Length: 350
Image 1 (cartoon, one colour):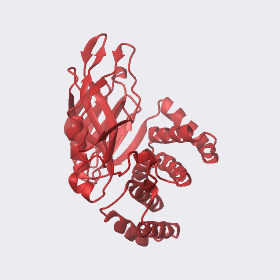
Image 2 (cartoon, rainbow, N blue to C red):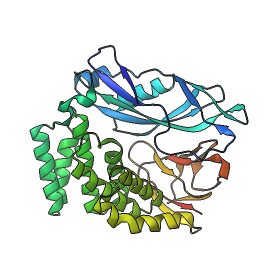
Image 3 (cartoon, rainbow, N blue to C red):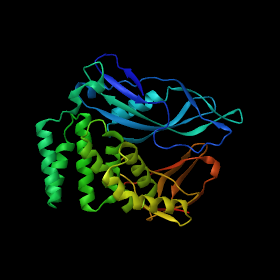
Image 4 (cartoon, rainbow, N blue to C red):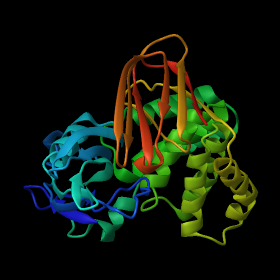
């Protein structure tokens, strides 16, 4: 983990910049991964710093054969545009020793880092107990929202969520609690796709600030939401993360049979179907687990379908139906899809 500071030394931001953070590549023995040589710390946007706003941005990018970062894009984020632009600007300036294959420099098409923006008035953010404090008004609305969900009153829960979403001055822990509330809301409403997305945010960014009991419950719900959405690879990743932090937890044992079934299915040859819906903002993305992909929309055209693998990338435009063949030596592949919001499509892997 690398740390950098803005022009005002009171404010800190943290970069997870030393290696890909989402997926482990399937590099061949003759391939040497790109190595980070120098980095530029992002500038903490003044407007957000002034208003005590924190956030994070996950950036995917290509390192070309000259070691230059190209084609950076936002993989996920807290939705703050200025953080997104600051992260993209910074990562674009990083320098790498390029990847090589059989000693020859080659492009490495999938790289991913998380850029974190933390506000802190102490010398060490992780020793600042204030990061675990939630304003009483925020906590009250959160608790009322959770109670409404438990009682099945989704209209009241949606009202509390909207009130919390409209708060601009949001600390890291408050954002994490909001994702928890949103995840529970979508889970109760039967929207496993949105529930899985919110729970994923909590899994990746809430462990430092949320109570362990809350965090563990989110992991269990994240696993189930991914299973319901037929995102078996996502479910496997949640389970293995859960196992890494508490291998003896009773909740993990209850999920073990479903984890084993998911592993068995992924190792088999049965087609895997996933229904996707494009979000209101940002890109839809999915990590593939098969070599052959078939994409069919609900009739609308997708603006772009971008396949970014460890050692290869492909792009398609104006897509209604598209077949894609992945080669084994391409490594881990992620599909990024852009187009009209709420466009539905079926992605079949075989």
